[in-house]
Amino acid sequence: MSTKLVLFVVAHKGYQPVEYATPKKLLEQAGYKVVTASDQAGTATATDDSETPVDIVLSKVNMDHYDGIFFIGGSGSLEHLDNQTSYNLIKKANAVHKVIGAICVATRILAKSGVLTGKSATGWNGDNELGAIYRQYNVNYVHEDVVVDDTIITAVGPAAAEKYGQNCLSLLQAQGSWE
Image 1 (cartoon, rainbow, N blue to C red):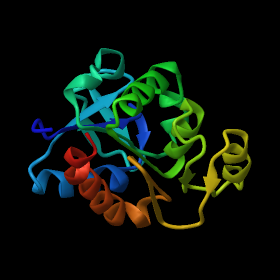
Image 2: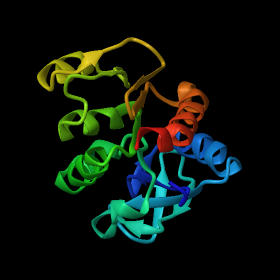
Image 3: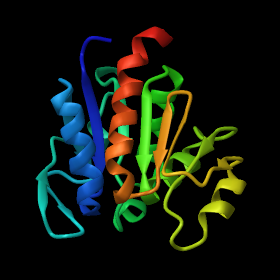
Image 4: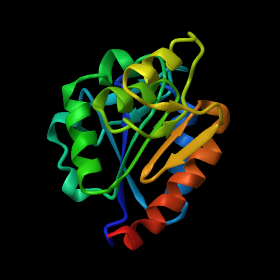
């Protein structure tokens, strides 16, 4: 694909700023345009009260325009993004082999959408519930910082944000060879 356009999905309140900023910077340095989507228009507020403008509301996203979709974690992710709108975008992206990623608690959204079924993944497990959630959705839980399985990448949290971003970039750059 030549568009080099990717979607970063953040909760309008409570996204994790390092998980957003670090991979975004890596992708932008490589020539990708990062579009920020959220469940509400206006400005999204991070867990540290920093802010970022929202470019598009999730309900208005057309996945045909993007090379990949990446869900950012943080305390607001499950409250604001764990819903049918997100699941539909993830399933559409998966159906046409786009790169899909999630970091931290947002990996649970991928599991619930069904795209991780039969795949290996990691994610935040500070509440010790990830293993049970992954078992419920037939996901192989791997205790690594970053896990890539086919066109899907998952990561544990802020400490893995740079490695996650590098792997997102590698998958995006390899994308043309899958089609």
